[in-house]
Image (cartoon, rainbow, N blue to C red; front, side, top):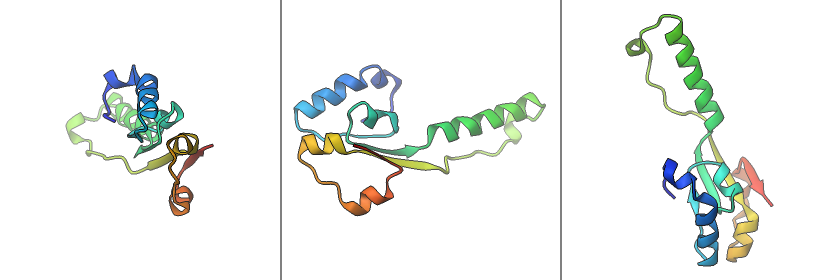
Amino acid sequence: MLGSPLFLAVVQKASEIALLNNLPTFYWASDLPRAGGLMSYGPNLPDTFYKAGVMVGKILQGMKPADLPIEQPTKFELVINLKTAKALGLTIPHNLLVLADEVIE
């Protein structure tokens, strides 16, 4: 699923429609499997927002934005919804479950 703010308004309904049509869904944010999606892999948003706050703090202390380094997310998380997997008739491999940061049962 796309990472669009417009999509976030209908994520619950989109997850329900996908499940009714036996479609597995893969998202970019960890909150979306909690809404019924199958799984997500993407940057840890609280960590990303924290880093953005640090940069804002530096700007407020007088640093020029052009002098700040460009940063990319360094912390990613994998979330798997086993309830959805079971409803879709899917078996998630054990080695993937071990790698997951969160498994929703």
